[in-house]
Every structure is written in structure tokens, then in C-alpha cells.
Length: 48
Image 1 (cartoon, one colour):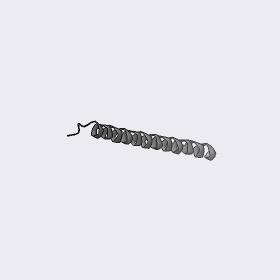
Image 2 (cartoon, rainbow, N blue to C red; image 1 turned 180 degrees about the vertical axis):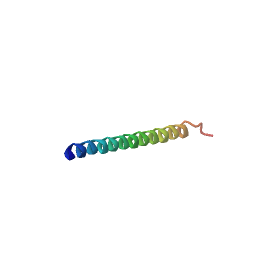
Image 3 (cartoon, rainbow, N blue to C red; image 1 turned 135 degrees about the vertical axis):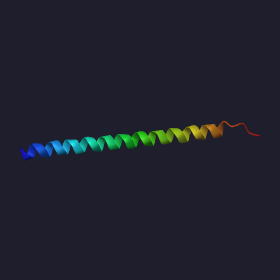
Image 4 (cartoon, one colour; image 1 turned 180 degrees about the horizontal axis):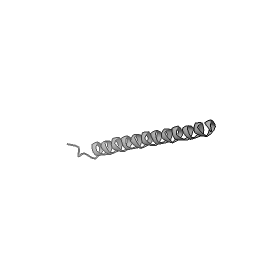
């Protein structure tokens, strides 16, 4: 019984870890996209 509970707890912790990782990856990807958009915006400004 104790082993079953431990396995369930381990799986729950593992799932939470995966969710945190995927959120981190998504946030990082959005940050890169924002930086790229700003870079191209600056690049495409007409030179005066």
C-alpha cells in the first residue's frame, strides 16, 4: 500500500515538473518572439 502511494506521489510530482517546464519553455519562446518583432520593427523604420 505504501509503495502505491509513493508511486502516485512521484507521478504527481513528475507531472507538475513537466507542466512547470512547458510553461517556462512557452514563456521563453514568447520572449524571443517579442524581441524578434521589436528587432524587425527597428530594422524597418525609415532612415531619415
